[in-house]
Each structure stands twice: as C-alpha cells, then as structure tokens.
Length: 363
Image (tube, rainbow, N blue to C red; front, side, top):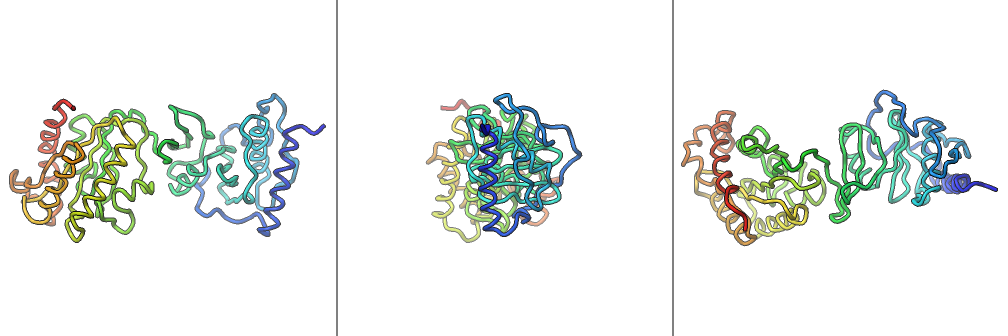
C-alpha cells in the first residue's frame, strides 16, 4: 500500500510536471531578490532526511528527481515539508508554479502559502502576504527560521533578524516589537525623526519612539517614494508594530500647507485616524499640529487639525506659534527645519506640553 505521504508526493510531482510543461522550465529567478544565505546551521529541513513526520514515519522524499535548477537538498527539504503537512491536518494546496531558485535559496508558491528554502534555514512555509512583505524587505530580515505559528491570537513568523505578524482582524502584516507597551508610534514628516524635537521629546518622557512616515509626506502628500499617511499605512509601505503601544502621535500637516484644500486634508486625516483606531483600539492618540510662527497657511492647517481632533474627540497639541513664542525661529537652518541646536531647544518644550496632556485623565 502506498503511504499517505508517498501519495501526496506523487500528486505534487504530477502537478509540478504540469506546471513545468506549461512554463517550459523551472529555473526562473524570483520576482524579487532573495536575501543572501548566512552560514549553514543544523536546522530541521536543511538535510534530505530531516526527522520523522507527525505520524512518526520517515518522510517520503526522493519520489521524484529535483527539477532543473533546484538544488537536490532544497528539493528534498521542500517535498519533506509538503509530506509532513499532508500527514497532518493542514495539507498544502497544489503548487501554482515550479520552484524558483537563485544562488541564495528557493521559493515555491502554493497560492495561499509559499515554501521558502535556504541551506542556512531549511524549508519553511510562509503565508503569501508575509512572503511578499519579506521579499520587499530587501533582505533586512534574513531568512525565515520558523514556519507560521499561532501567537497572541494572530500568526507569527520568525526570521533571522526579526519577526513579522499577520493579523486577520486587520488583514495586515505588522512588525513584532518587544516591549511595545513602552513605544510611542509616531506617524509624521521630517519634523518627527528620532533626533528631532519630536523624537527627543518622547524619549525624555520615557518612550521608545517608533518613527513611521517620511520627510516630504503628510495627510495628503507623498514624496514620490512613500505615499501620504493613510495610503502608506494601508499599503504597508511602512509596518505598524503589533500589539498595544503606549502612545500614538500623529504629527504633520506642514507639507499639506501647499496646494491641497482643507476638505482634502480633513478627509485624509479622518481616514488615518479611523484606521489608527481600528489598529489600536485601546491606545491613547495625540495629534500634533504644524510648528510655525502662528500665521500663514501653516497656521491655518494647524487650526484645521485642531478642529478635526475635536470632532474625533482626540487630544491636540498645537505648536503653531512656537517659532515666535519660544524664540526658536532663529534656530531654523532653512526657514522650515531646525538644525541640531533647534531640535535640542524645542524638544523640552514639546515634552513639557505633551506631559501636560498625558497627565490629564482620559474620559
């Protein structure tokens, strides 16, 4: 009698043969560059005989020869993982295409999941959304060291240099940050880097600033590389940390002061606020307006954000006249941005004003 895992391997082999026949070969490079493999370490699945299946039987490998361009050890590890999943209660669907390999390793799409193999990490199964995010990271995470597993009500995948979470409630991939409860998640523009008055002020209050957004962006404005705030969040152009951060700060509007109407700014601000609330329903949110001299279009956008915050019952911190009120205008390098001395001078002002807000009891 053919064992269940053997039967599964034969089915996979038949499906793969059909894919290879349609594609003509199995040596295509991945659509995105896979990270370079690290030094080999002894891990499950990195050798052709990688232990027993969940049923306690030796995995049935070597049913078919490795396709052209696929390392034999990688093919054995991936088909072993297919067999183990088939022997359990989570069989993989049929493969959509032949494995795609580079010098670093291989990937093999099964539709909702993608198998990934390298000599250093073995074969792992990734949710395809997580696989896509991993590929787009440019190798910053290294190779996966686990397949997906349940964690905190969501799904976690560990990599050599970090962890990704998939949250079904949000339909979103998120970053795993240890001690996220000490973090202040900041969505902002060039005023809000770690070494700016925003980042330094938060650090002085005991928060670990997690800076998202980018210079040149805002509620309605992208910078050509990164979209505006709501688009970048929903498109996962930057990843929100998973869990319950200690604070969320929405800073910006200066880049929206040139061109967009109040209606457009308001609409996108509301879109962002509602998505942040959906993401972090239990986290305090503070909106920080537009730093300036108190007048002009920057002052108008600050006033607009104050109204939006009141409409959404959010706390608002206005820095719109700080350049004049605290004699900070002389510390601007280019008329809009502080140099180091300016950030050092503005940070304690921001920390003091934010502390006043945070010391108020929440409704």
